[in-house]
Length: 176
Length: 450
Image (cartoon, rainbow over all chains, first blue to last red; front, side):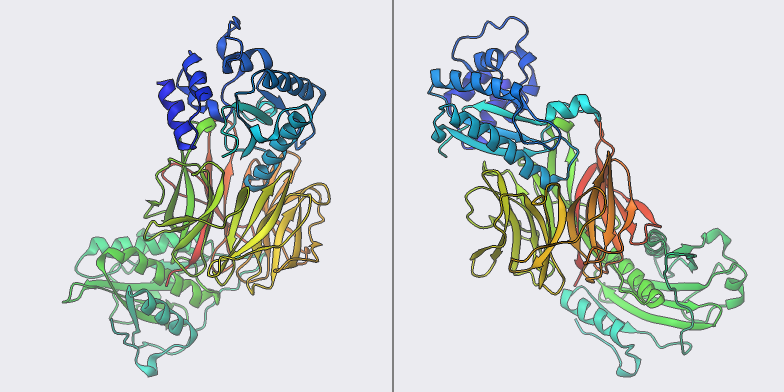
């Protein structure tokens, strides 16, 4: 079921990449993984084992970390964020077969329109940093979801801080 | 269909406007009934300080189908009550239970229940199968008829006739244009909040006659109505990159607006309906562009490293208000519609977003964020006279009624719930929920039908 959803989503986006299928195939999780392409794939999904195949999407999510977080209304990369992006750049250098989409997201405390622009800025900040760390720009594509796809749903800071994020999604169809 | 308006019964601008409007729609025809008395005396002046809604008695319309007559009366009653300008009197209090169309009312029996105004009416099928609706509006204390009109329409359009009658009453007694005979495009929301299914939908301004315009396969947001065609512009994630689209709501035909190298969002029509202005995101910045729908040529309007978004034209098309964080936090700016020379107009405490110019030109509505609250407010186009209409977590996205005297917006209390649409008048005195089948956001109020 998970695979079907992921493939359908990939097809809808005009993306048919092995990586997307790998992500779906490796996932042992439930239907919520349908949101995986929208940053719904949290690091905790795969349990504590971390026995992911090196070079797999699961490996990237579990052992590298697929997302960085931002302060309120900020698009600046925090030291934690740059540390994660350093690891991402290294991993992406090691596995050059992946095209990458960086999704920018905002929390709900902003207007819809402004948050699309804010999400785009966050994705761009992560993209620019990865490029500065040697990832080929032609592999990278950005998209903003504004506040449309929160990962955490509540009305306090514990959720908002998880939703202000840039997620590096493998198999995002760069060069489209 | 013919328009039967005897010259000696023409009532000037109101009737002419209606007649033109209805003629164009091919929906209904209107003609004036012979007045049973001469001049008007009551009127309502809405000012903020002390305002009492006008007590009005709206009788069930007579005719062969009492059920339909009662339904029309109920739609008019609901409209007038929701406007906050009128206080419809409970039918149970009526002394004269049999007031009809044909004789002058027994005014004493309406005075005793303090009805200032009285509406009587009748609805029948004429021999050709059309619906014929007639009504009279009376000034009870002056003992005079203020309006007498009749409408012919398809029986399926009985709600519209009720809205048109509501507008005639509202307009006659307030001196303002009406707004009831209008529709609202909005985003219907279902499913879990972290993976919402969003569909474009359209409804009458009172929340009835909901029809879905998209299927929900693609994420859609921020629809805006064309001022003069059956078209809606909105942002959709349909083809990978999120882009601005144009949708014909009658034919279902849809197209991408412009060929821009990046995400386009926050679209809005020009007042003449010939252009769409929107934001284009490139790199870390978002700038404003306009596209001419006839020539398909695009014009860059701003060129900054900032986020410029939510553009909205002044009703004369000469100026544009928009939101920008070029000075740090989001604020409201006004510039010539062709770009250049932007001037900041919002200076209150907080962040200002989603400015929308009133169709009357007298106010700009906005969303204001301060601390943890999101307010809907209005200000004059020079930024003075700010008035907060509603406040709390989380109000957003005002849209103007066609008469510029009401706004709709959406409110989402956060958590796992969802948004609902509300209507507020520009004094902030009257706020009512707009019914919707599910969660609903991003309302866009269309023009008066016609």
